[in-house]
Image (cartoon, rainbow, N blue to C red; front, side):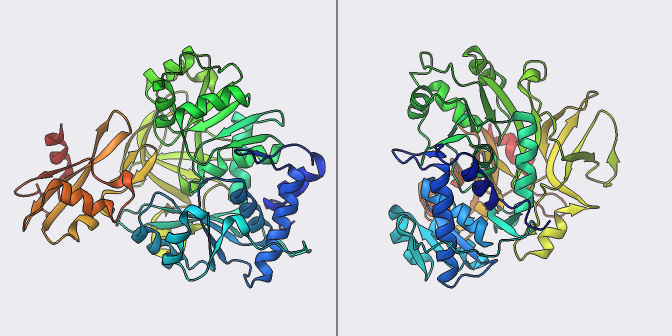
Amino acid sequence: MSGSLTLGRWIRDRARTTPARVAIDCRGAEPTYAELDERSDRLASGLLESGLSRGDRVATLTGASAEHVVVFFACAKAGLILMPLNTRLAAPELRFQLEDAEPALLLCSDDYAELAATLHPRTAPLEALRESVAKSIPGPADDDGLLLVYTSGTTGKPKGALLTHANCFWTNLSFDRVAGLSAEDTVLQVLPQFHVGGWNVQPLLAWWKGATVVLEPAFDPALALALIAEKRVTTMMGVPATYLFMAQDPGFAKADLWTLRRAVVGGAPMPEALLETWHERGVEIVQGYGLTEAAPNVLCLPPEDAARKRGFAGKPYPHVDVALRDPESGRLLEGPTEGELLVRGPNVFAGYWRNREATAAAFADGWLLTGDVAARDGEGYYRIVGRTKDMVISGGENVYPAEIENVLHEHAAVKEAAVVGVPDERWGEACLAFVVLSGEATEEELREHCRARLARYKVPKGVRFVDSLPRNALDKVVKSRLLETAS
């Protein structure tokens, strides 16, 4: 039955079953499931009456909020595609994505209203959206787009990964079968809603199951620890930096964590010492691996395996197939071995927005090519050991050096530039730039040049000036040699 997997019906079904239960707890706002369903119905009708049509993109520039959740489910019901913009990006980065996706409307919270007005001809305040009398409207099909999430690109230009209703349905179903939630759970959500993990790793599943989501607009480690105690939080999701900052907070040792039965970590491998720190506080850590193009869940290491298989990302989720291939020959590898990780399943995305070439390059024989190198042991557990892509993961954010190099080359004094990832105690990895000058420029001048054009987490932590960049016989920069000099 077409539309049976669409996410708008999740709230309709839940509102019918548990109308009075609190769906969202966000700084004083506590909408129930009935209210969330009713408001998203009215907004869906209002958006369509304002001239939007099925398949149109609705961009948002906002922190996490209850209003943003209403917009998500309104889009899900109306057949519109939500395009949550990364609030950490600089104006030129946002403008590129908007020009690429051509959304019909840009919704923003008050704190981004001035910026939004410079980016799109049609903007509206998130807090005062036009709602209409709820009408019966034709819903979307299972394979219609639901989320358009932009990811950094190897060429320096981001690509929009289109996730369908079916992608989100299956990834939440598989997540539930490994690290499930119940209606009695209280979920602390501190990840930003411009990441797929801000929707598909716990929050959407929580609203499907009837749980309460404690939603925070921004992450603050001390506040997160306080909320766990105050709201009796039972589970949460974060990247390694989330748990590092909480563990480093002066109140961590005495924080009341007894209700927190499980914490999920993704985005990058979690250091074993940090795992031990949380285990000593009695908190189970569920490790995993995913990527936006897989909506995002691929591998999961349940808590019962955490001690025995430390450092591993786990086994594939239900309904997800993985394989390893030789990056050179493309041949699939059997048994305990190491190779590029491939993914296949109903969670894998529909493709990159209006980019057939990039979509075709992302697949081989029906498998999604992750660009990550994994090792598989004799028990079928996978460990991420490296990357075939030229990518840096800083604080859980994917950063492609080419994007930074392109910006550096825009500076009049820069002749050549190469960027590499180096270890960073706080963020896991950070970017370091090597620059050949053709004129005069200081390190701070080049970093300021980057700050004006890139998100803060992409700005190089340092700039090293060199006479030339090491190159091979094909004139390609040998970044391994730069890394040798980076320590």
